[in-house]
Image 1 (tube, rainbow, N blue to C red):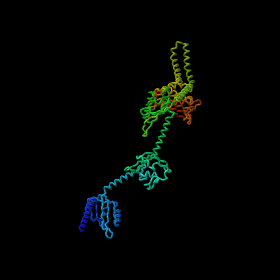
Image 2: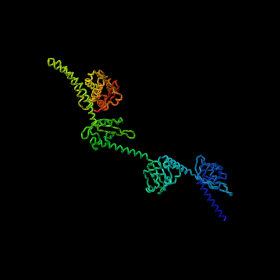
Image 3: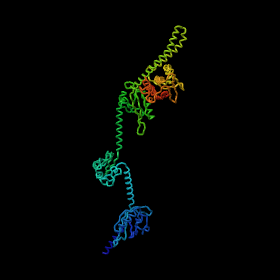
Length: 613
């Protein structure tokens, strides 16, 4: 029996030795005495920490702890061990070189007969690698959580049963959730009756799970007292090992985008309505001058079908070159311009049109196209021409009396010379030169009168404005001379050529000087001052007559408004229109009983002046 017991003891001792070897290879084993000092450390402890046994034996075990956990850890361990309980925990310690490491530690108290610990054995496992992985995982989770909270979209995780697991601050603000009691609850439990309309976060997700794929849709959410908001929502089912695991809901608030889309759509509809139903002809051109689009009014105006344009408008080469020049001006200046011109319809009829060209810009402010709005002004042009012609005839009629008197003088001379030739035929050669001069004088007066009376083609040519003025002064001498009114011309140059319609300019000068003569007293002076100022010519007509009241100046030039008892008010209306067509302008200054100054400013050169209108 003794041998059997001895054998069992040897076997038990061998088992303990094997266990010790195994523990020494796998675990850090330390023995702590009743005073908390290290009484034993195994080789694993030394290889792991870098300390040898002599370095740590007799050292307070708690001093091996590291970091902020020290105080709380010591108190918890002491409380459990003094009660004879096993303590387990994760401890951060440090190596001899000062670097920290983590261990999973189990401390077992050994009690004496009085149930007091007389020593402790601590078995620890190095878990530094695991803690590094866990720390990295926590860092990733924190980054993910920070990212989710930074996203302005609603982000929500639910489990397979629809319970909320995680959400971000955007969702909490949207749903007005102020506490943390939402975790593990369903949508109806959290929102309850506060929701007026909610399809953003469903209560039942079974159709999403059945599909097994992400679903994108537009959803809504609205609460009492707040307007309904629209969300672009993606719901993603997440499976693990073939089973339902998580449901991710991401919702982006697109209320403002939908509002803008609606505004754009409304603006597009309004534009289409204006474009399609406008009474004016509208065309869209690209930078190459190619026709992009026309409306129905354009096709009706010119009598063309949409297929007839074939990307090129106008069809005739002359008008096309004119349009390309205008398009280039708009592209270079970036400004709207207006022009008047003549176009031909498909049936060959010529019509007058006003054309307004406007740049079309993209969101960056770059010009990407040009639009034209064209209107038939044929009736207006014809009416204007009739007004001009009527005014011409009116002026001619008023001049008739003066011209008749002026004609009597040379006719009397001619009659006298004719009688003298009859009595003295030998003096025919002597009197012939005098008679020819008188005939030329009569012919000049008649020609000027006919020029005013008969209609002429409107054609711009370079003419000497001083020569035109001289012709008008010759004609008006018949009105000024009987009242002893002197017409004085002043000029600092001999010739000034402008692009103009000669007949129209004569009518302008005739209207202004006739008004000045009628407003002046007998024996007065009327000064015509002509000066070249840069690239323009200034003509100032100055009289010292009765003047115009200040409250009437703004109305001068309006149809049928006149300060003369027998006037029509059309003279200055026609004058203003003619000067405007010549790219100039008219200024009038006047004081009662002091006099009136009419200033006309016109360009000496104008590359854009049309050759015919």
